Amino acid sequence: MLFGRGKNAKLTAEDPSVLGTPQREAEPDKSGFGRSSKGPFDASERDTAVGYVDLGAILIRPIEGLQIRLEVEEATRRVVAVTLDLNGSSLQLQAFAAPRSAGLWGEIRAQIAQSVASQGGTVEEIEGSFGPELVAKLPTSTADGRRGYRVAHFMGVDGPRWFLRGVMSGNAVMDRAAAEELEELFRSVVVDRGESPLPPSELLPLRLPVDQPPQEQAGAPGFAAPERGPEITHLG
Image (cartoon, rainbow, N blue to C red; front, side, top):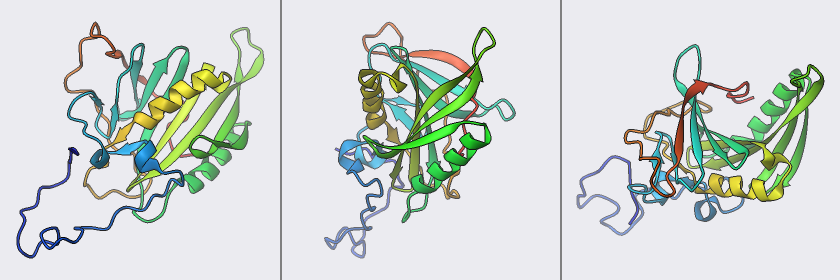
C-alpha cells in the first residue's frame, strides 16, 4: 500500500479515476537511470508511515551506526540541510523545488562549477552511479597552516517537481566501499515535495523530527545538535 500525502478528493461519477482513466499523467523520469524503481524516491512511491525519520521534505531510513546532523542557517535559524555521518564519511542532503517538465541538475552542475572556480578550486565531471556527477577540490588550510584542499563529491537527482542534491565528503571521496555505503543511503531517501507552489530552486522546508526514537534501539540513528551550516549549502 502506498502512503499518500496529497489532498484527499471525494470521488464522483465525473471523477476520471471512476471512469477507469488516470486522474493525472505519470510524471516523466527526468533522472535518466530509472529513479522511481532505484531511488531516491518520491513520497507517493513509498510507505513512510513507519521505519523512517521524518525531517519534513526529507525522510531517512535509519541504519546501524548512522548519525544525523541538522544544519542551521545562522542568519535565519532555519534548518537548511541534513548531514548523515557513517563510518568516517558524510553525506549532506538538500531538496529543492523543481519544474514539472524539466530537470535542474544540468543547470546546477554549471552553477556549482562556477562557484568552486570562484573560490580557487577545480571541478571534474564524471559518470557515476546517478549519472553525471562532480568531484570538486576546494583550497583550504591545514591545522599546521599549510595550504591544502578538501574534496567534495556532488550527486544530483531530478524527481517529480523536486531535485535532491547529495554531497559526499570524508572517507567516501577516496574509498569506493565507503562511497557505496553513502550511495545506498542516498538511494533510500524519500522526498516529500508537498503541495505548496514554490519557485524552481527554492529549498524545501526541513524540520526537527517530531518523535525522536530512543538511540538505544537497534539500528536507531543518533542525533547531533543543530549546527551552523557548511560553506556550500546553496545551489552554486
